[in-house]
Length: 88
Image (cartoon, rainbow, N blue to C red; front, side):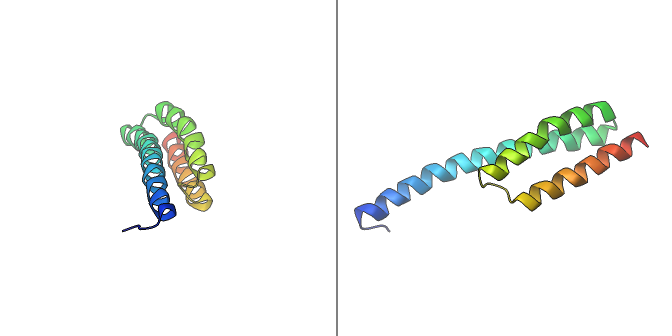
């Protein structure tokens, strides 16, 4: 357990930051799930719309340090390929 005042403060800050990051990560997963569900139904228009909403959310996660840049790029790439395949 933290003993010094500085360590106690850092523990409080980490607690708040963890809550924010958790909410942000959850929000990103929700957007990704919506894309997955649209792909599962086979509706390309809905999947494209969901992907358009998910992309900025994922990249926002990158700028906030919740998701790594390459991870976000990989997810977007794979999802867009799957959405594109619906049309074929």
